[in-house]
Image (cartoon, rainbow, N blue to C red):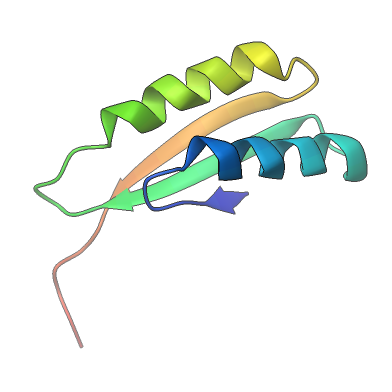
Length: 72
């Protein structure tokens, strides 16, 4: 599982290459949290699709969650 704010393509790529070469998994979850009224950065979705096609040994899943505005 990898948490990202907006997902810089270069950082995502390096992370996925590391996981592909060093971890015993074929699945990767990329998680981003947006404000309740916010949208997922469109570039992030495009970049994940690009990397999913490029790095065939990993199955990528993008998980988006809305942040809660409640504070304790």
